[in-house]
Length: 291
Image (cartoon, rainbow, N blue to C red; front, side, top):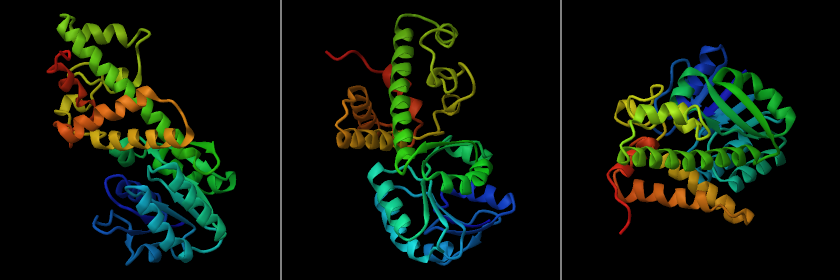
């Protein structure tokens, strides 16, 4: 396929490189990031999109998505698919889709899970909203960039699935870190704690696959000084998106709200910025019960 790829940072760069490596013709555009191997450099987002069968975007937020959509949709050929892989608010995802569909384009919102490691290895999971026809067109590309793509429903459903998933992740990571900190203060060995919880009713992905305790369980950022696999500020972004969506949908999410507040404190008032989101464990370990 002829592909336009806009947004070639930590996630988009490896994704575009994997598409080029698989033999696709990829034209890329980014304001600052270098072109990955095999990706041709376009002078603008519109130039990257012109003539492409699929245009993929990986952008920081909904406002930038809306601005990029306004630039590239008029440049895209009728019948092409606009596939946004950013994690943004549901309203922006749906607005971009409406604009694309009005121009005779297919539209997908397809946020990812798996982090930079998954982007590099081609093992991402895509949560996809949009038409079945557009999904089928892009599915071969999802198969190159990731290990799984789930068609979640109409436009916006991919973003909804992503923010619901990451709200669970933020809450469970906090609970896992709290439990390890409590176990420490009760004199329970961390390895014994892991051996019990990872095979009992308290198991979770946060415990079993991404354990926040160094030297326990599979290798994780905790074993590398909490250098981010998934940065705390990105978790904060996703939790805030979950609360924005909850407010719009009139949904009661008290645990999600509290998780967002805790990560905000960790990132903005403490030392969490630039650290992995599992660095909540040393945070809780040094804290005491409020007086």
